[in-house]
Image 1 (cartoon, rainbow, N blue to C red):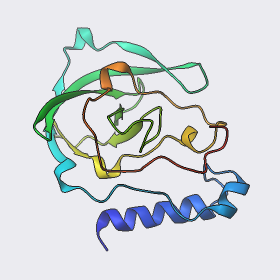
Image 2 (image 1 turned 180 degrees about the horizontal axis):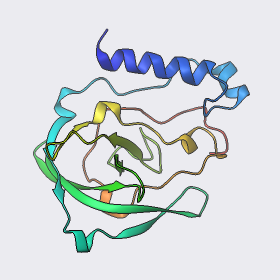
Image 3 (image 1 turned 135 degrees about the vertical axis):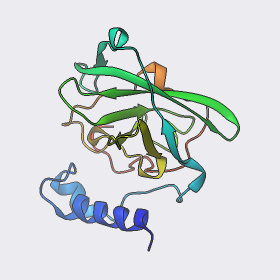
Image 4 (image 1 turned 135 degrees about the horizontal axis):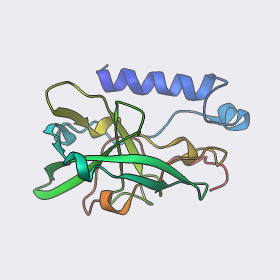
Length: 176
């Protein structure tokens, strides 16, 4: 099994068997695994982060699934191509954290993937580049259970192309 296969198996075990899972007890009883796009090596990148100038790194209030907002720092931009189409995504940080956060929507959003977008967590690697592997794209916890409050991908991170990698929409979502 590949590294991504092992990761997915672990995630399924957590979702189906851990009381801290985002699934309700009723959902865990029915749970048979998350659905994923096939592993896609074309959607794995090592990209230079074009960091915004310090005086333009604004803290924005990102809308959330509960109608509230959550502060995020606009940190920089990643530019790359998907199926020959040039695209760009803004990378965010928690104002008090070090990890990079990449919420996004794409042409699969609302159909094959969750309607409010998916996420990637991008740990810093120290050389200014980030490993962006969309095979690890995941749904926020509010995609499973409306008791969770999750940031909604901002309009600047809505791609016109399909990101056919990572987690698909959850069909047993409560309250959706």
